[in-house]
Image (cartoon, rainbow, N blue to C red):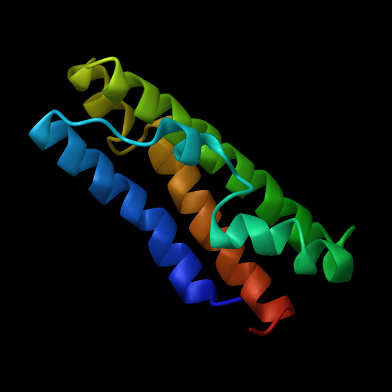
Length: 117
């Protein structure tokens, strides 16, 4: 698992949301809300589960990752409903999405120490 790429891929969601807001375009809400389809999700629910299931750091990462995609799905839904102001508010500092983004990045960094690439 390329942990740095996983962190970057999740940070890219905010960039993509900002682009969608600026261009009034839609985003893939299905992909945004799924914690199993991204590379990190595949790894968490595949190889990592078989090696780390039950480990506190692993479980915290799974939870943070799930929360991130839940929040991303909510933002994507607002964008796709063309509720652009609400979506913009939903990605601001202090928002559920912002906090989930920080939590998933920290959780992945912690997990990186347990499970080398």
